[in-house]
Image (cartoon, rainbow, N blue to C red):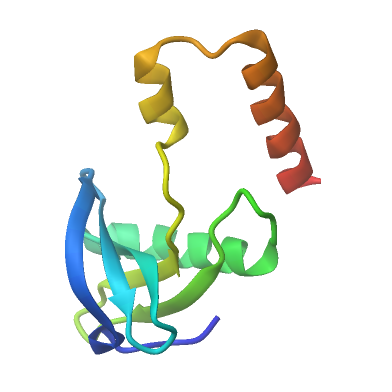
Length: 116
C-alpha cells in the first residue's frame, strides 16, 4: 500500500456517512479501477483509520477489500482507499431479515478464515 494525494481519486460519490467517517465510491486514475475512499470526519477518527489501514495491509482475503493507498492531509485528516466491492454490507443484508442457517454458517466460516 502506498501513500497518495487525494487528486489521484476522482469523481467521488458519497455512499455512506457515519459520525466518524465518509465513504465515497471514486475512480483511481492510476489503476483505472473503482475504489472505496474512506475519509475521517473527526481528527480522533484519523488514528482509527490508520490502524485499519495497517490491519488491511497485513491481511489478504477475498472477502476483505485490498488496500490501495493511505495518506494524511496537512490538516491531519486521514484517508484510506481500498478496492471497491459491489454488494450490500452485512448490516444492509440483515435489514431484509435474519440470515438462513446455511448463509449464517457461510459468513462465520469466512470470518474464521480471515482471522486465522
